[in-house]
Structures are given as C-alpha cells and as structure tokens.
Image (cartoon, rainbow, N blue to C red; front, side):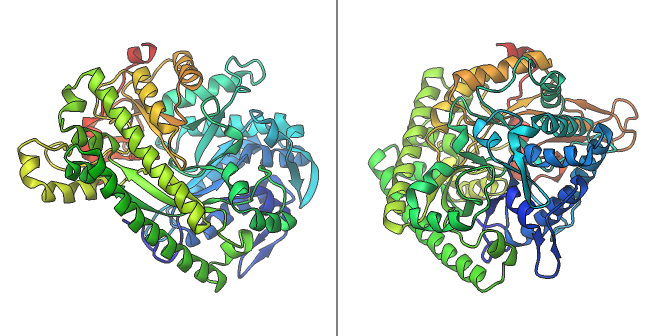
Length: 551
C-alpha cells in the first residue's frame, strides 16, 4: 500500500521550529526574514506547513509550539484576547482543504508546558536572535495552551471538532495533575479531553519522553537512537544546526512504511511458530529491499533540487527511519491459535495468551530491524500502522484468498456483514474488555514497538473531567502504554447547530440528519466519509460509558 505520490516523495517528518524562527521562511520564490512578531511567526508556521506538505505524503510536526511562540507574546505585549484570536486564525487556516485532492495538511503540534526541563533549557528566539531560554517564558506558554484548548473545546462555527493540527501532550512526572502551578489550565485540559478528545497523550512514565518525538497520528520517533547510529553525519549536522527543542537533530521521521499482513501469515502457518517465523522473515526481507529502493529514490530527488524545502531545512535523510509496519496483530494471534472466536467469546486466559503471541511477533520484527540497521547503515523502526485503508484492503483480499475457511468460520477476518477489516491495535476495539485491562494488555506490547503505537479509548458518553483525570493518571503511572487518546463520539447537526457527545444519527432538536464524528484512525472525521471497512469497524467498536471509566 502507498499514499498518493509516495513513489516520489517520502512519508512524514518533524521540523525544527527553532530553525524557521532563526532563519526565516525560504521558499524557491519568496524569502522572508525571521519573524519579529507573534502574527508573523504564526503566518510563517502555516505557510511552511503548506509548502512542506507538497514534499511529504504524511504528517508534518512541530515540537514545543507553545514555548517557541511564548517570547513573541511578551515582545508584542499581547492581551489574551489577541493571542486567542490569532491562534484561532491559525487553526482555521490549517483546516482549509487547500492541499492537492481537496485535503488539509496532516499536522501535529506538541505542547510541552513546563513538563520537560531539557526542553526548557532550549533557546528562545525572536527576530532570529536568542532572547533567553524557553523556560523564561513559561507564563506566556500557558497563555498559548489555554487559548488552544479553549478553541479546540469550542470547535468551529457549527460546533464541529477541528481535525488539525493534532496536539500532543506530554505526561511526565512534572505534569501538574492537581493544578497547583497551572491553575485552571489543568481543568481546561481535561474538559477538552472529555468533550472533544482534543489531544494525544504521550506517556513519559512508561518511556523516556526526552527521547520521544511525536510525529503524526501514532508515529513516535526515539531520537536517542540517532546519536548511536550515525555519529559522523551528526557531527557534521551539529556544526551547522540551530539549537532547537532537542539537543539531537533538527528533523527526523520516516521515509516510508511497508506493511506486513500478519493475519494472512498466521493463517498460513497453521499454528506452527517455525513456519510463521519463516514466512515473516521472508516478507520482512522483501520489505527491506523496497524501503532501500525508496530511500535511494528520495535522496536522488532531493539532491536534484526537486524537494527544495526538504533540501534547505533538512539537507539529508540520514535521521529518517525505514519503517516496517504491522497490521492485524489480534487477528494474527487468533489465527495462530486457531481460535477465530477468541476476541468475541474467549476467556481472559486465552486473550492474555494472544497478547503474549503478539508480543513475540513484534519482538521478532524488532530484532530483525536491528540487524538491518547494523548491515545497511540506516535507521529502521517498527510501527503499529493506522491502517486507514490498508486494514480494509488486506482483509478484503484475504476474505477472497481464504474464502472457504472464512465462510466456515475457521479464520478470523472481522466484518459487520458488509465489509471486512483488520485491527490497528493490540487489543481489538471490537473486544469487550474493561478499560484498565485493555490498557494493561496494550502496555505489554506497546513498549516493543520502536516506531509508533496508539491506544484509543472510545467513549459513548461524556465523562466527568475529574474522573477522566484520575483514569488518565492511573494509566500513565501504572501501565506500559506509551501513546493513547481519549475519543468521545461527537454528534453535530449542521442545520441547527446542536451537538453532543454520543452517537445520534438524527438531531433531537430539529429532526435533521446529524453527522457522527469519531477518530477514523488518529484524527476526527464524520463517519459518513469513512471507507466501508472503517465504517464496519465503527459499528463493532466496544465503547465505554461514564461508569466504566471508574472501574
């Protein structure tokens, strides 16, 4: 599977906002000096994302946006209302479908507040000049965060949730759970999560958050690997780089993903681990050759000047990973165990055994990726892919390939009776598993991934923000879950403006058809716009009600 035009341009990347603020916006046609004011900084951010999106098929990410914007607020002496209005303009601009194919850029921003001392030590920049450390502007950063969460909570003029940019929050030991430093901002964050599912949550209790970089809807990059693998290139990069939110490279990401159809391999193995390992290694070697071919092509295209933004602001792809993607882990485990009803009727013991099999599979792929790094001299990682269309496509192919076994119920290919699909999770979302048990099992396997994972908690009712805060903290402190979201289903009437949490296909106020919004993979879109496979998955999702969050 490939995204449109990805035969010619790579997948996803993070950009150094510090570099843009230090050097200005340089495009092939127009060059802008470093921003001197808050409005100019936001304008350059938006323009950069739109231009860069033409050179990458997937997500574009900025880190520590709140902290890097903060010095401009102090310099311009802006009121809260002015800050909020200008951030509102930025959000609307980034949701305009101005990209090729009437799409919006896929954008991700990470908000640090004061959760990372390492980030706070970074340079604050205004007009291309250092104006102290980022930690000197925490108060102004809180203004940015408050405005953003209020805007996400409000939604657009119809009450629809904003799709982009997707904010990521860092849950570290410095996170102010009780609001002693952040005051009402802490309450606002959990109000927005309860009502809108606003942010992704990156768990610094389960991982070294100083070395993680949130890229897109689930990709997290472990930048600690970069200094270990490519020391000569990094030394050269350090000589010219502008200090940013990380002491490591300005930009990292993934050049592309080749996905392995795990349920098919598990079905073909017929429960024999040796056979499954043989089939998996064979496909991984093929994926490796594809990734190497892509990398060579992308580097030639960049050096030829056909991706000028990438060449100017990155200069090379040494810090970008070749990514092995995995899909259908729970279906693969069930097929390997030859128990297609496992996730519907199975015992807790059987499900736990399946999770251990999934962990074993991911460990095998991770070890192979490390061998590839040593032999090829490039970075490799392993991602649990979102599979927005891939899960539907591969399941459809397998339903045909294994038609007899599928019709006899001897193989697990989930379906609503109309369309099949494969899962993009460790515990499938159609499994009726208590919230905390799901988090425990997800955490057992999530840590084995080196590229990206995501656990969504799909809610049918709006939870009490205080209860939600307790649940999020419990998951962060006591499970191995690395990356997760709170995802309430949101219904909106475009005719009269009514909206509420929950699944309502008809507006109770005016009787018109209502739009039901949820995360198709990592971002909110109306269910009616989803492909058949994802609509089938939505129908089968085990959603949680308010009382379940306290269990």
